[in-house]
Image (cartoon, rainbow, N blue to C red; front, side):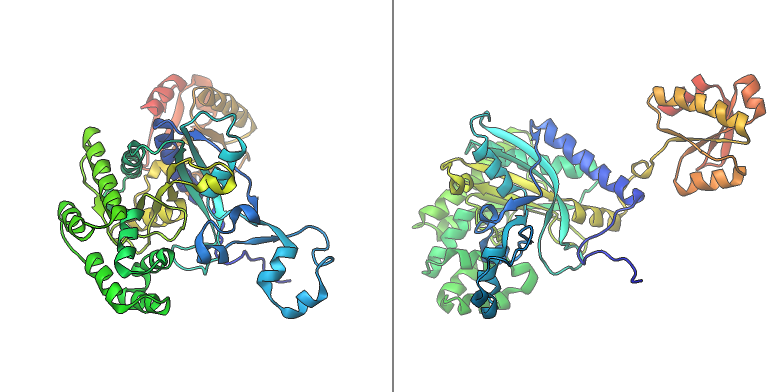
Length: 454
């Protein structure tokens, strides 16, 4: 019999890992709710017509398709099979796909439920997504995203609050060294104008690969897509400009004197910085990155990308404004903006930096150990009192040697073990063992509760 396996790019998460992941989920959820976002879930599968064409050419290739139910080849023309053209064939054998992200399904939801939604509509969503990507460190085929989006307003207050939420999430997770990179699609459009080419999307896709393949490879790709060397050189003269945020703004203003797109992008970015000041926030952790492109084709305004510094992992969060994503579903002119946290990369980064607090890995605060059936039954009553007071408690279920019970508590990193013997049953004073310190004291149930509540 073959050993069981799981698909490449997917992972199992045991209890210890899930405890840490739940720590991330809980902290992100608290921040989202603090800023007025409401929870939402959408189906694992969407119609391919919903997903296709929303992520750019390369994104479409990474969609996981789901075969139609039943005999999916029954109605396919035999000549189509002989062509071996998978792109044409997929239209006849697959109508659904696994969701690629949470933003497009959200836009679809908004359109389908627009009569019941109060705009601006703020929602958060924590669910897995799937991409048919090549698995590698920090890149998976199945991974969780934690999204927060607001639609129905074009106010840049939303962009400023995204920056605030990112900072607050990272603070709650104990991540201190990170960078929030911000750019604007209109600034990239201004760059495209300098090339003299109308092929904006190809420029965006190529620039988005700068961190992965480097400047020379990006230039080669642009040449292959018809961009001339003069235009490419003018773009990289801007992309490679170094300086403070204000110096970058002043430099771009001089370059975009004849570009309405460029001027619009700079003005929006300056307004976001001004709003942050009104909130009392500083520009700490915020970087104006002219080369930030983000490959998804639906972004139209400010774009964000967050990286944790000094870890061998890519971006852990990203997002931006999209002015007409709902338009493709029949509801035009509804602007939205959102941010997404990649939990799997956050997890890997926090593991690398050893940032998970010990309490995030504790499933039970107390375990009751015993010696025989009588002390086991007495333990059940004590456990019930602790649980009713909100203390996570478990009772070792079998009558066995005390050492085995203590080993179990150690493996589960349970901080306190209450040992119940005949003396404890008689006088009601429990033997409480601190598993970290190796110390033990005698306490009543009331004293134990006081100790555990801290």
